[in-house]
Length: 284
Image 1 (tube, rainbow, N blue to C red):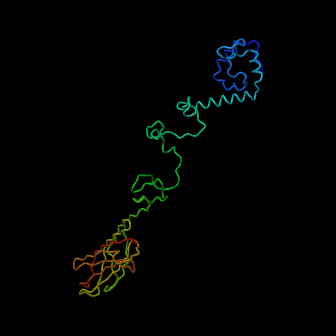
Image 2 (cartoon, helix red, strand yellow; image 1 turned 90 degrees about the horizontal axis):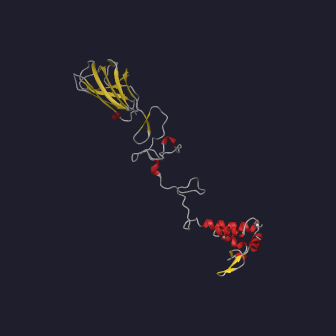
Image 3 (cartoon, rainbow, N blue to C red; image 1 turned 120 degrees about the horizontal axis):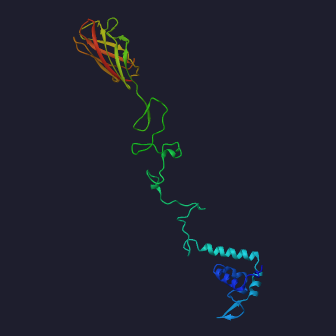
């Protein structure tokens, strides 16, 4: 590698002076040039020896590709060290565009995702959540709706569970009467019995003619079937009363053996009387 003949020594000296600070690692390419200056002739000024053109050409001729690569690597390493944290030319990535090679911890920016923020997030644009109850509402905190039960008749209860709607119905029916103690013949139904169902509660009203066999306060009983079946567990699961203008009233309780209502009264007459009955019970 030689210096072109068209390049004067003065031009070479000027060029080397301009890049001397950058090319300091190149001093290792030829130790003979270390600490010497470029100037025409081979004189000494202020204790410095000056490099002649012939010496410069000889030095350049000794530069191999391998030594040049080594010098360049040293330059790059020295330059890179100036940009690390705490160095004289530390780089700050603020304001730079593009992506960094290394993953970065983002700065606090939650406010930008709030409503009316610069980068507001829409709930319907987020990915589908996991199929769990982590975000369900509770009695203590607000939250999301639990997963639907899939039944059109269910409702969401206050404890966060789905429950079936209780039936509400009203109508009439013709009960089956069962003659008990001191009843003569078959009791007569005087008009339809009416009932009202409110969830698991049933209310019944009606009229029935009862003909006692004996009077004088004789205990008389009559069984009345239910409009909506119930598995009565105790006599107190059904309660009601019967009224008659000519004597004391009747008591109606649950017959838990036969799952029906049982009316009891003390007969004061053997005449057939039209009793007005009212009772209610739980569907069990």
